[in-house]
Structure formats: structure tokens, C-alpha cells
Image (cartoon, rainbow, N blue to C red; front, side, top):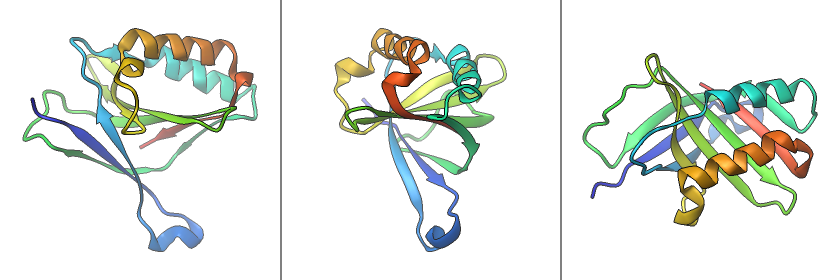
Length: 144
């Protein structure tokens, strides 16, 4: 089995220009892709209503690591970062294709429990977050 990772490099701003900010996402292993278009649209709509939901453009580059080739080519990337009330953080990397839309391709943190990265568990968490955005400290939607 080949392990695939995505290293996301963010644009530096202000005093951080000397540093390269990045996150590494673990590939989501699934027999089918999870379409995230509905969740992205819902989070965008929430950003107009809630101060704890923000969206902005800051992805400089996404580097595929650990594999010689990937079956899909992505037009752009989106990251959803969530900070829960207990300060626990989680993130999701989405890649966009013209034919299939916005697909979940990676999760962060790297050491996340494999059971929590199962498609049905991820979708259930997103439903809870969309329906109760006040139950999290912050949701960030970051575009490339």
C-alpha cells in the first residue's frame, strides 16, 4: 500500500514572511470520493451570519507526496479548519475537479483516529457543525 500525503503551503503575511507556514494532510482512504460541495456552500453562507466562521484565500501551493501519480488532477483546493470549544483542532482538504466537484481528499491532524476519518463519521460531524455553528470556536474556509 502506498501512503499519500498532501503538504499545503500557505502564503506568508506581515512579520511571518520569513517563515513557510504549512500543514500536512493524510490522504482519505475510501472506496468512493466524498463530495463536499454542499458543506462548502453551507459554510460560506454561515460566514455571513456568524463571526466565528470566516473564509479567505491563502493557499499558495499543495504538494502531493508519497506517490508517483494520482488518479485525479485538481483545479483548486479548499481547506476547512475547525477549532472546537475544547480547543481540539481538525482540518479537511478538498480538491476540485470539473467533472466530480469538490471532493474530500485529506484530513488533519496527521495522527487522527482512523475511525474518525470514515466517510460516514466525517459527514455526520459536518452536519452537526453546519446545524450548530455556535458549538465550535472557529471555522475557517481557506481557498487556493
